[in-house]
Length: 104
Image: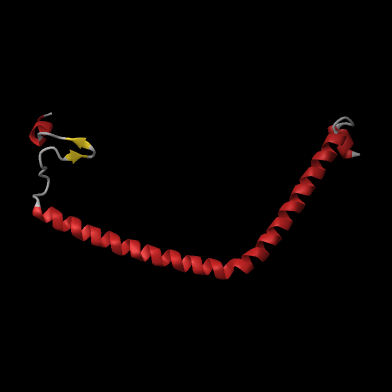
């Protein structure tokens, strides 16, 4: 009776349809959550193996990065810090005379 007074007789069928759709969506989502939980339990060993592979790959990449940093440091030691060879790019822009760039 209160719903009829609040929404009126014209809105009552629309309200019932909306409530039914919401209930169906809620039911489908809760069923999906239960199904996902069962699938996660089945795929847990595969996920652990993939995680281990990812850790191994990350360790190899860290080692490679450290090696490249050592090589870059050795190359910097051969050339004075901040000095550029003529025509060497700075952030992708070729510079023919580094002194001219400082003058502005």
